[in-house]
Image (tube, rainbow, N blue to C red; front, side, top):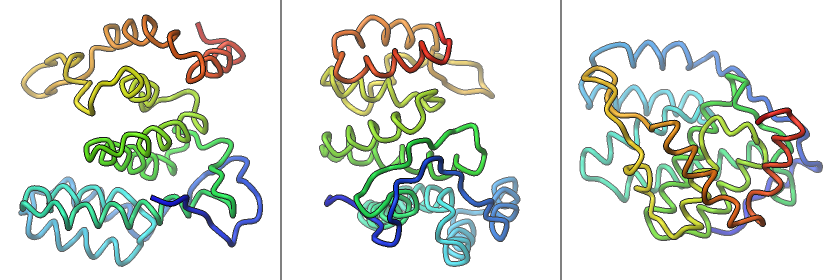
Length: 213
């Protein structure tokens, strides 16, 4: 994909904090709490996207439904077009991402979740360098890395695939399902990340400035 730019934004955003999207957020979460059929849920997500095309959680739910309907091309097109919208929301005329876009702001989470999902789509389709570029941009903007983007970067550098997480999954119980073993994945990162100083030295330095161990 060519570099995405926003010709209407002259300067790089210092700190991106998204809008609250009040016209759709309440309905979105209300719908998820209801036991709707996939057909009904699909209609609602399409409606929410039309109502607010810049709230990106709706795209993720709709894409999952399309994949379940064995419509991968339609799902991919949906995600690709939404990704362009998402990036244009945050970049400047030269394609620079915000200096800061932190997970700590609840308003940012829908767009950050979406960006990670699209990066994984690129990775799944063999567009590894594109995925790596997206992960790098997101990590730079959010060094606290609440989403674990650094692990994806390391997995790519080690030549692993998008299923790298499988080696670190543990069962948390019937209701909780599976989750990453935090200690195991942290130990793995600490063991291998130093092999790639061009990727991670800046991150370790940033953590040191912030007082992290």
